[in-house]
Length: 191
Image 1 (cartoon, one colour):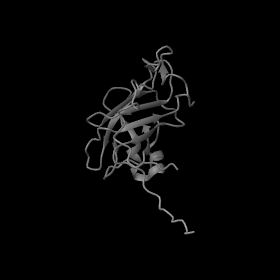
Image 2 (cartoon, rainbow, N blue to C red):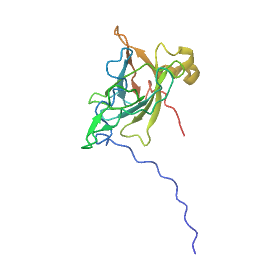
Image 3 (tube, rainbow, N blue to C red):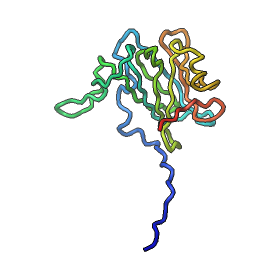
Image 4 (tube, one colour):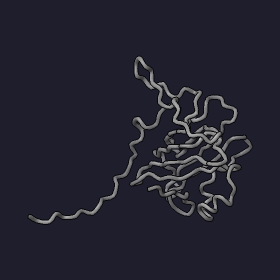
């Protein structure tokens, strides 16, 4: 009997752009309870290696509540018990999870609560065309993390993980993601 031939592993197939069906959901970027006075908005753009916007990326966000707790609370996936139709978030609970797609201009936005000082970031997972695997990064909220902490994490490029205050409006932060190039965002390797 012949010896079995060993096969080399093959690379993963790209992930999209097939996100438009079932993955984004209404209110996916509304992580904070409706009208919560402490809510903040974090927004930005996803850019490819040529500096062009990525119009069909999907981003997922996870974070701890302001008190440091991590919830798996109801609110994200409510359905009508009679019809099974999707009802969206309840607008009251904080789940710490959001999922949004980028628009035609590569823009995305989430409204959430400030993360706690012990974990002053939003964990970000990015899916996009041309990526064989999703990417992980963090959006550290300016004012909750020191510049030295970011340098300790990623050296001089640590600033690419900083969601910076934008304009005069309180609670507005900008976090752009660059997939490649001179301004490439620091991506984390989770095995």
